[in-house]
Length: 65
Image (cartoon, rainbow, N blue to C red; front, side, top):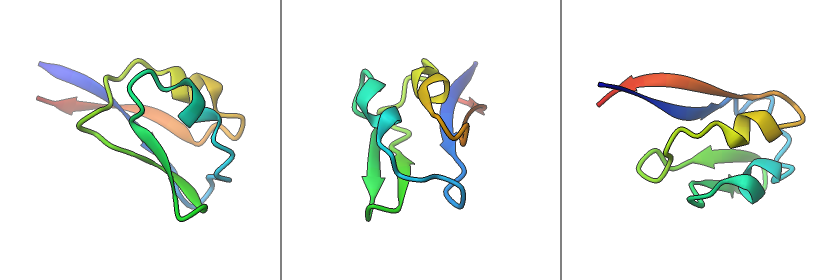
């Protein structure tokens, strides 16, 4: 069964923290103040972070369980 997980384009992320604020599972942190990092174990694939990202650098990708 395929699941969705958030994926951040770290080279374009501006580390604003908007994604981190809307994540219901606290799966996103700001790594070194440089970019957002997703903990795939905590990510439930809801897509809230991707919708909230003002830079549009978060996408949802399918992963196989």
